[in-house]
Length: 176
Image 1 (cartoon, one colour):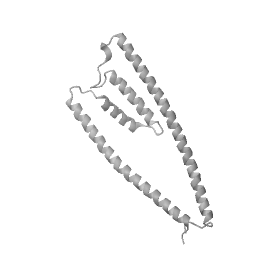
Image 2: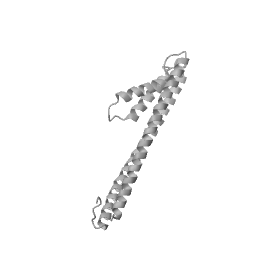
Image 3: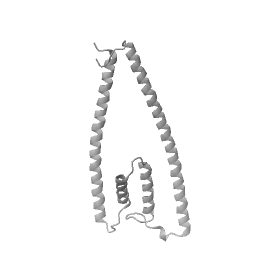
Image 4: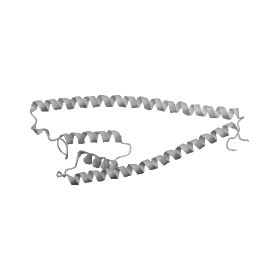
């Protein structure tokens, strides 16, 4: 005769396997659709470049090509989000300076007063971005530590429950 604890463990294992199977299936289909979207995006960018007179790459083309190159050459353990953000900031700056096609024209036509205004706005935007990033990182750290603490207590609660169930079953052997 099976004990209640054995049935509980059977259900837990069954639900864990079912959840893992669903997650793996969804990951498989989402990767395939992501690859398809990536191929469509590349074809669209290539068609747009062929239609333009200016054969320089656009900001998006430069961004995607550099992101692809960094993914290939990335060292394990590097912070990918931080690297991508720095890359994006550099490419936006280069686009503002007129390096890429379809971007704003260079700022050579502006007088000193307008350049000072643009510089002040850029500094303000950078300061706001820094403040927002620091706030977000602090919130993420707080949520991560709360989740880690919850997982720690949930693990020990499950261990205590299993030990209590084993004790209530009269120390029955579950696998028989």
